[in-house]
Length: 189
Image 1: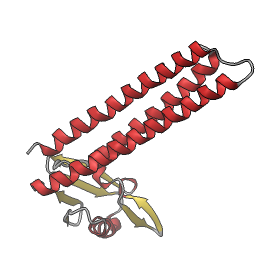
Image 2: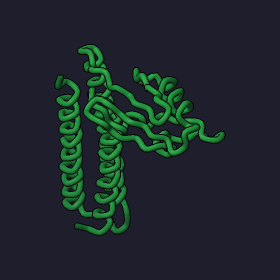
Image 3: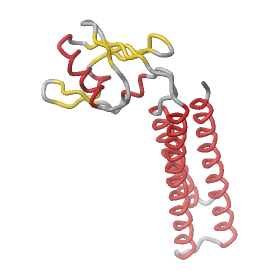
């Protein structure tokens, strides 16, 4: 493979990898009726005048499949963490016992499950848009190489475009597999 073409291919692959990584992170935030500390990742608490994620002010763990335990590093943070969780509007009801906070994850209704599947599908589609954008950029760079001096030979350009399309198909397939897995996880009662 031509070194310039290899650079284009590697760059496209890196961008597609980032799309998949982002999708994986977003899918872990969609709760499937099981206790998962990642559902609190976007919740911030006021820590001495600074907004910080809860996991930077306390230990967040699972006690069992339906219970999260939050143990603040400072007891004075119990109430602010409890209020931050309520304000985040996640449908969770934190219970403060003076030492730690327990959150019982309620079972999901059928309607809520469908909403979560829609959200997961949207995240997968966003990742696919990122992958297709990387493909488009790579194809344009190949066209630029064809017009350069010395020009990239036509057969090498076609070969590079084919390889980029195969790569794109592989990453779109990865998105579909992640979505299928998450959908199954959400719909399993």
